[in-house]
Image 1 (tube, rainbow, N blue to C red):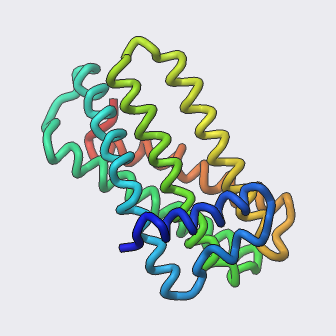
Image 2 (cartoon, rainbow, N blue to C red):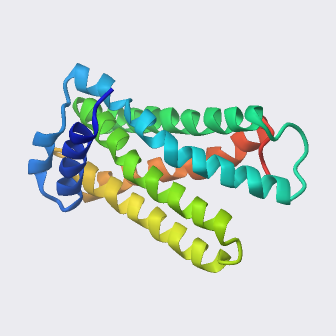
Amino acid sequence: MPGLEEVLFYLRGILQLIRHNPAGWRNLDISERGVSRSFWAIAWSLPGMLVSWLSWRSTYIEFGGVGDTGALFIFRMAVLDLTIWLLQIIFVAALLVYMKKAQHFKSMVVATNWLSVPFSIYSGTLSALQMLAPGGVVLWWILMNIGLAGAIYASYSIYRMMNGITTGPAISLAVTTLLTSLILTPILQTYLGVSL
């Protein structure tokens, strides 16, 4: 598992890409080994994800949700998030193939995996605030949407920094990432029995 120093090195590269500096790619390992190691981002994202799952569980109970709300509920939330994580990669990869830009597949996987870490921390922090101060719904909603907008812009910027990908295709790739989550999350929530 990559240590903190290594992860921060990757994240500095991600930040450079978001700032439209292609030099950020030098901080990312886009070899086959680097692609495999980038999935350790899931482990680094788990603390933030766990807080988000607990927050959703709290809301689920508050809204009168029925069924198991213990470990099985958390397991279902994990299945949901990890499924969305992988489907986003699959759908964006399919779009890259359609665009005849399949050579960027490894770069996409590595960059988007590590990008998930700071946004998982951000989401987890907001979820913790929601549980500690449930009255601040409006502020939470504003901050969550700021985070969503930031994630879209970050994704767009990373795709834009891939050689040969112009503004239009970069927007399409970022929107695909967003729509995968927005459309499939409620479907999977219903299927897994964790919808409100």
